[in-house]
Amino acid sequence: MLGKMIPRVHKNILFAYLSNRNVVNKIFSKFEERFISYQNKKFSKIELNRDQALVKLNEILFKLYGQNYSEKKGMWSEHLILFSALSNIENPPNSILEIGTFTGDTTRILSALFPHSRILTMDLGPGEILNSQLYQYETRNKKLFNKREDNLKNLHNVNFVEDNSLNLIDLNDKFDLIWIDGDHSYPIAPIDIANCIRLLSEKGLAVCDDVYLRANNKFDNGRSTASIDSLRSFTSAGIIEFELLLKRVGFFSNYPASNKKYLGIVKRKFRKSNLKFRMKGV
Figure 1 (tube, rainbow, N blue to C red):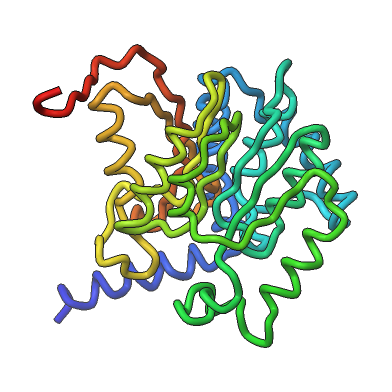
Figure 2 (cartoon, rainbow, N blue to C red):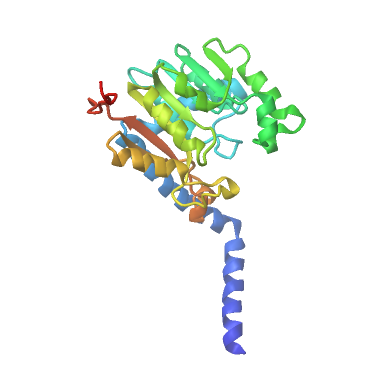
């Protein structure tokens, strides 16, 4: 009986200890400091400055929304800091493609960060979104479409197209920055990634959202390894190189491990192709 009681007593003591808000905050802060340190090193590895980027991003967000960056707000995440960092480089992206306009928040921020760049953003039309039951949490009472319209109005350098991203197979333009935030599961994610690698300029970067290292590929709860599987396959073939950044640096975004998501930063390796095709008998 005593043996059964001791573990229970220990758990109660631990719970009471952790219930102290200051203690919990200190524990979470320590972990978050480690995540931020990790993220800063990853930014430095790709020759970007996260701290400077955050300062600029906060200036932009305050002008647009009257508040500073917080990863707890809606869909905001480290991708915005990454884009801000890219806007600070000597030769920032001149041409940008966004797959997955959603509410238009990221589009609006991209337009402000890159005012002299041309931006093409695409997403499914209202009918297809409603029929496919995508974005259900945002489509009630036309919430998504109203917010998208509000965000995209008066953006002088943005062209919004209602279309399926699979139709990018017909596009021959080149882009310096591509944000891949469409369907993250099989079979769409690998096709989007393949199309975007083809559309990258020589100095271009593609950024894949919501990269899971472990997941159920039935896309349970929005999780799939489709992106990481594709990135690893293209890397093995010598076509790309990629780095992973944390999508968010908060404690609960990284624990348990099943919650952890990454941003995949993709650079194409341009090389002379050895492929030749001849019709038989020609």
